[in-house]
Amino acid sequence: MYKKLLFRDIVKLFFISYRTDQWEGDVKTDTLFKRAFNDALLLTSRLRDGDPIPSETMLAAELGVSRTTVRKILQTLTEQGVVAGTGRSRFARASAGEVLPFPEAETVPTSVQVEKQFVEWMLRGDAKAGALINELDLARQFKVATTVIREFLNGFQRFGLIERRPSGGWVLQGFTHSFALELFEIREMFELRSAREFSSLPESSPLWHELRRLRQEHIELLSEIETRFQDFSDLDSRFHRLVNTAVPNRFIDGFFDIITLIFHYHYQWNKKDERERNEVAIREHLAYIDALLSRSRSAVASACRRHLASARQTLIRSTSDTGSVA
Image (cartoon, rainbow, N blue to C red; front, top):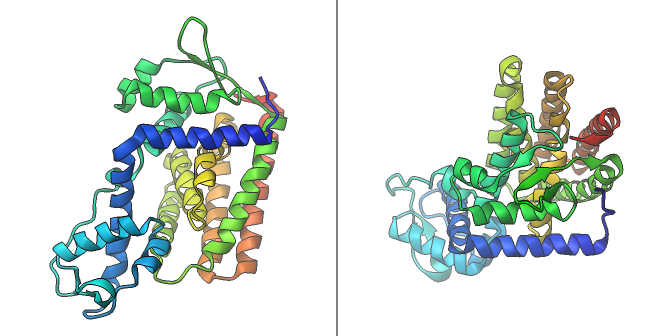
């Protein structure tokens, strides 16, 4: 059932995000460290031997972590010979041997992994409104505890997207056209702000390397669109999540999970012209990425608005055709 998105509902989402932090516990902290360590390793790899290492305050802002985490990263880099010196006299050691980054799978929070797997489960299985969801089956399939699945599902139950059955288990609900459009307004507000800030990031930011890597992935997918068009869903999510990391905000991060599930995948539930729509979206992403790389705030705003307007029209057509996204 549709529930009007009120301020109290958004506050509830913030608490959902907080609880997610709790059940991930030390695992999330370890994941955050590994992600930031990889970013720091990339940053230092661009320095010449003897170049000064940015201050702890600058690194904390650049990596999006606390100074405590930065100190742990610097200590690890020092132990591995990548960094030398102490305090404000630290400098890069280009002569250090090869230091391997942590595997990408270890840098992704459990909540993000579950979100990705859940969406893939819906898309690949062509899930519709009324589909039954079994916690135990998903836990086994995703290789996580049932409590992790339960917390994830509870986050969407509050808005009527998923409903718990009295006899146990869950059922996937549709969501209305009006509900989707209200959430879309929030997505536009968040992303336009983040896109503008992204264009102002310093060249040393690891986000630029990740953006260029995603650009190449878009080009590769476009060249194989006939057979790999369904792979766009994951690429779409990673690109928009990257844009939003330009403005770290714990509340937006928590809310992004809801936005991702509904708006980065909503049109996939409507299989009509899926390949063609994904190709158009990829080309829009590439124009968006090139605008970001140009660092022109006006070009970024234009490309961002153009892509979001296209996504909005896709949403309108999808929900109008079916009455609800299902």
